[in-house]
Image (cartoon, rainbow, N blue to C red):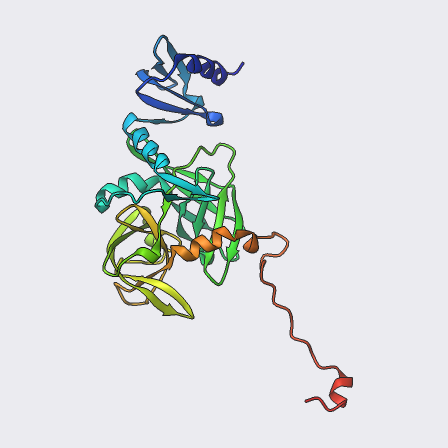
Length: 316
């Protein structure tokens, strides 16, 4: 029996114990009070005995306070197929408070020709970014900032699959498929239709490669028409590298995906409304990516050409 199996058998018998939660490989976990931390092992009191857990089996250690926040987030949110929305509106907090809670859910998307931002929408590793971040790329990696011991630790995942693309809405749905990937921390999707002009919003992303950069502003308008589509306009500073990242309200909900700005200007940023994103997710089968046809689901055919017989018949 593997060490993980022995640990789990003991933990099941011990009941619920307050303290840290140690997340293990194979998506198992042990909750208890840490007695001693060594370079190669951690000793945990689970109530009636102490377990020695090899470091090689530990994915991360979650403090009791962090676990409480995660529990609240889970119980106050409802999963709608692929993503989560709030059951009741979360309380408003200032940006400083939200940044520490949302850090794990915002990621950096890297390709051989550049980088962008993104955010995780469920524990299984599904994430959103812009189509133009991944356009024409065959190698995509995602950097996630996991919370460990009160600090964010960078982890790069290289087995990233394209699930769906919508070129015209500039949206891409990806999934992290690395075998050692843990359960991911996700963010909530809000309701951009209920927003009010002048409402405070903030973005987290990687402008010019400076990961986890936070910028704050207000919603300038909800109905800025550009190229036939409506966008959220914001004074929040957006720069290359922010593309695909989340625009949050002060309830910690994603209300838009940042994707462009007016060149040589500041305070003129734009985001795709989250209602458009939800429609994309709800109908993702229509935009499913096919490796045999990178342009899927759109394939443009050559226009029909006139034949000699048709031209002779007097058709001009």
